[in-house]
Length: 106
Image 1 (spheres, rainbow, N blue to C red):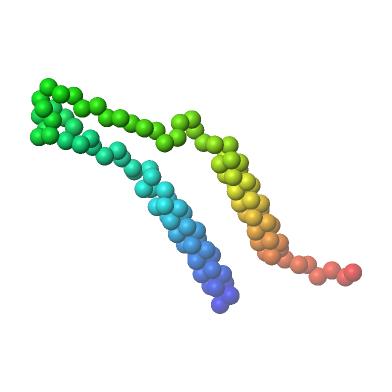
Image 2 (cartoon, helix red, strand yellow; image 1 turned 90 degrees about the vertical axis):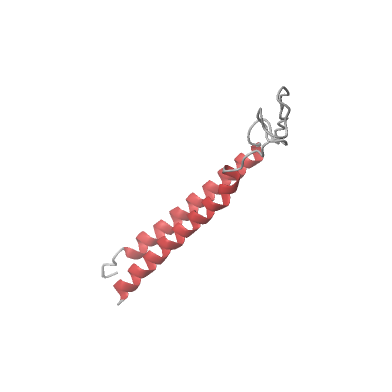
């Protein structure tokens, strides 16, 4: 009975981890698939809103120019270090719990 419970607990942990990964990926998906809206009037030659000889110019404004700020890089590094430390502690506790204690006289 205990062995079955252990397998069920591991399976539940794996499924929870997969659900967390899926949630994180779906949270970032809207930004990854964002597109510019088409210009007013259709955009190309021969479209109803544009005269045949006129050209349509789109003005693109960048929100951020020049990469990621240093504080965000530091925050990501701190988060990764904390995650690695937590994982190392949990792994050490799991290995220690699985180690068999040999009866010795003290």
